[in-house]
Length: 333
Image 1 (cartoon, rainbow, N blue to C red):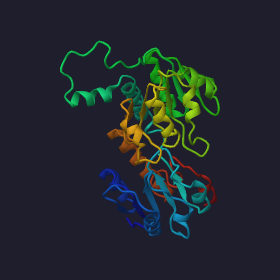
Image 2 (cartoon, rainbow, N blue to C red):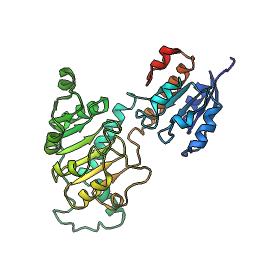
Image 3 (cartoon, rainbow, N blue to C red):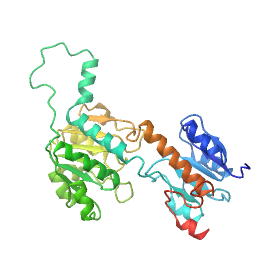
Image 4 (cartoon, rainbow, N blue to C red):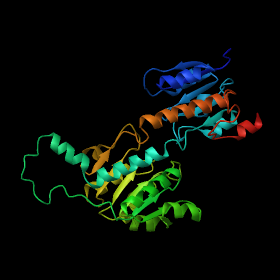
């Protein structure tokens, strides 16, 4: 088969996914994980028809300026705040992401963070590994806060938020949520969830999960004022995006005991993590890996590949990528 298209993969991928791509297109794939500079991205993208890129690769108007060859960018994530979608659309470049395939795995991890933070799992493990468990612990040592039967609050009730809410039934937890718009009654019933205003959500939630997309409007959606509304016994979990929480304000609230604990998978300015958060025993920290199960990461990579191939006119979905961010590009083609 003649391979008229060339693609670049900006990070290491599963061999079987690269082999799938190579059936249709010529593949240039990076073999090590790194963040690319804008100049490197311009150079890499100048010589290809499409690319699979990660969240650390910022694709904006300056990166694609003057590029007459590039036709498609497949983001290897459900979030896409690293993409300037209007600039890509104006340039006639398809943009895609990888939604849905990671919903359940990410919801599982949100619960893992909540349970670990509420029950002090990571700090207790560090204490044990340091050789401190020699018997004779006090009866009131390592007291956490209960999860079962408490009120779960969800800020951002998309598909992942809904998956989180459905799991709450097994813990006997009433669920409150806030979205910009209320969900259809049938979905609320399926999730056993009740819509409330944001301030009420913050005041009533015993545990709060953040699952909203990052945008200029959601920047610091949880800051000092919002943290002040929450219960001092509450646990906050962020699996959404860094920047949604004011990490400096959160660190101070945790240090001062105005919040019981936090479970964080994303950070403002990551991979940097606020220094105070790294010092706190009541903060459970993980390096942006909520979707990191073998099956889910393979499914994400396969969807990104299918999106890219379809955008370039290959495969069963040729011309219609499964998860299009700017279908108007196709309408103009």
